[in-house]
Image (cartoon, rainbow, N blue to C red; front, side, top):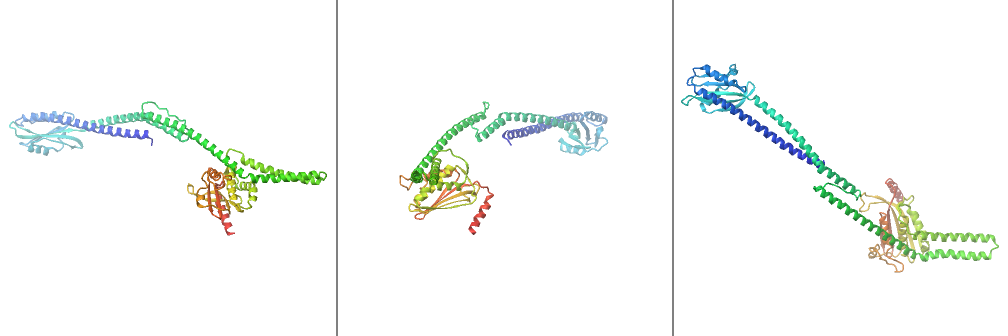
Amino acid sequence: MKLGTRLTFLIALIIVVVLSGYGYFHISSRRDILIRKMKIEVKSMGQTLGVSLEKLSRLKDAGYIQDIIDAVEEYEKTLGVVVYHKERDLVFLSRSLRDGQEPYLELIKRTIREDSPVEEFGLYNKKPIFSYTFPFKNRKGKNIGGVSILQDTSSLEEEIERAKGSIFITIVILIGGTVGLVLAVTRRWITLPISQLMMAIKNLARGHLGVHVDLKKGSEFFELAQAFNQMAVDLKEAQERIIQQVEKKLELERSLRQSEKLATIGQLASGLAHEIGTPLHIIGGRAEWMKKKVEDKETVIRNLDLIIQQTGKITKNIEQLLGFVRKKNPEQVPVHVKNLLESTVDFLEAQIQKQRVSVKKDFQENLPPTLGDPDQLQQVFLNVILNAIQAMPQGGSLFLSAAQKWVSKKGLENGQRPYVEVSVQDTGIGMEKEVLEEIFTPFFTTKHQRRGTGLGLTVSQGIVQDHEGWIEVESEVGKGSLFKIYLPSLASNALKDDTETARNGSKED
């Protein structure tokens, strides 16, 4: 329920309670006034009748007394009159009571004994009445009789009911008018401003920082709207500053990665020179040989084929080098890790042969791709594999593997997720625990200053993290190191069972 509705309901409830209380007390006071007025009339009538009876020393003229009673009864609200003479035990009744019993005779006798008037409400022949009973005296002051006047209160109750209806209608009109007014006021001054602010907040949450709330002056909501507008302006300015800072940071990271890439190319220079130099020597030698055998067409054709082959090899090496060095914007495309690892190994073939390293590969069939930038991921694989090769100066074995794994990493909200696990393991010199803790620290290196910048693994870790993955390292001095690179797999959850089945089948074999 909205604030304006709740406020309207609360105010309406208060109004209903207040006006209902007012109506109740008004009706009660009106009833009291009417009853007091009726009592005054009855008492005045009784006092007049009592004075007339007290002046009679004897009740010889019964007709006179009856005339007085009949005169009192003519008053439209008077139901009847009962007069009792104690000494002569005579009872006088008005015409309306002659056919019935005298229900108030005992009450008259009691008032004579107690010398005190009595007021009572009751029923007579199923009619609501008010009775006023009092004694009358002789000239000596002795109680010689009593009178009971019965007043019909039906008209009183009808008047009270009419008052109730009138007050009820008045209260309903007041409540309806007041609630309508309150509803209109709350809608104009509370509900609409709150709705505008809520809509502005939702737009702000969606990223529309140019939102502006325009409210009329003179209320707290105007001040709140002003504060909100200022907050939106501050957020927009902060967003622009953050975007600028992020762009600068991204540009710095791209420059850093490009610098590290160039440094890696520097390390590969000798191997690449060998890869290019050997085909050039072959081409030069075959050209000299062709000069001597110009007339031998078959020999010339065979040498030309060899020259073309070696030229293609040189072109391929140069294209790989230029493709790796060339600075490109990051991409987000499906990347087949197996193909990327194969091309990286081809790229490092000279280093592998020079270091006398044997390469063993184990790639899962139908390995699903990962989403990312192939150039950046090749830089990661190149750094890690090159480090592994350089960690085996006396030669050794390099193990490369790639498979899909379901991993439940700390911090993941959805439990296990499919990842492509790339393992690079060497049989090199290994690393001590202290070195292992610092390998991802910028500018930390165990290589000679001319061979390492101390940024290779730092840049690689940043690239992998940008791809929502991570790197794990295990190493032991004298036994080698194992790098595990985890990248999110594009495989669906339906492939989980197939992966588990294939893994179990491999274990059984």
